Image 1 (cartoon, one colour):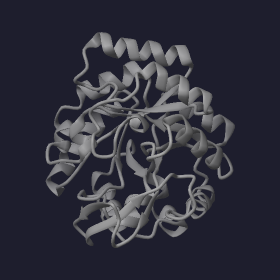
Image 2 (cartoon, one colour):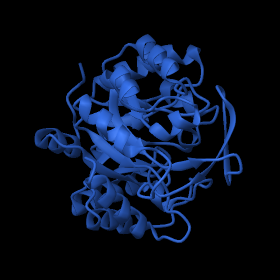
Image 3 (cartoon, one colour):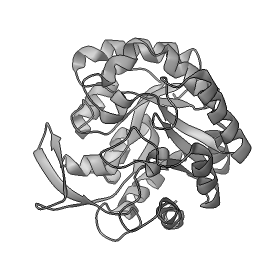
Length: 291
């Protein structure tokens, strides 16, 4: 069973029985430069509101555990003013970059919980790269449970969450009701995994959040990501609302089949030739046809 949700956005979505659109502050970051925000939080929140999003997914480029208390208070005030929920917090850059220091949050989860509580976020994104970190994940989840907060791990390359089998094995080993998954089909595709209904049904009990980004796999792609399971994979980033790439109709058919009614987060920076608002608006319009 899941713990009760604490964020207004999650609660509203579940009462309405529909998925809630959330915009990641990543839209104001570059793909390879995730530490500097290109837009103040107030401007980004108003943009999200204009485009019809009900929540922001907070990352360290805007506010994190490194931020001074006054910055956190300012962010909380900005969100209250715009009426936006926070769907999730990624509180440091090591988790964002999925580097070797990413799992360190599991050994000191308290400041992340403090940040999530102040922003009204129901969940915190964390990272695991080795099986030895599973014990830390259990302890961190137990502490988070005392505050009604979930911990989640994204489907991600170079982690214990690369493959469907690895995801299932790791979540079963952690075995905590408040530790779950951010379902992200693009990373599964990069790792050569099925990302449709069969996989969604297999992982359904752990899906606490959904991330969406889009790509076109091609041998001469402009970008390359290393994976443990399939080696280096080349691709081009394309807008979520552009044709080709990830089959989002397939994804949402699977989500609806398992009764998912949580948050769906646009987790992608604006592409060349489009402004953040054009990207956010076009993607929201597209996703509303699917949810």
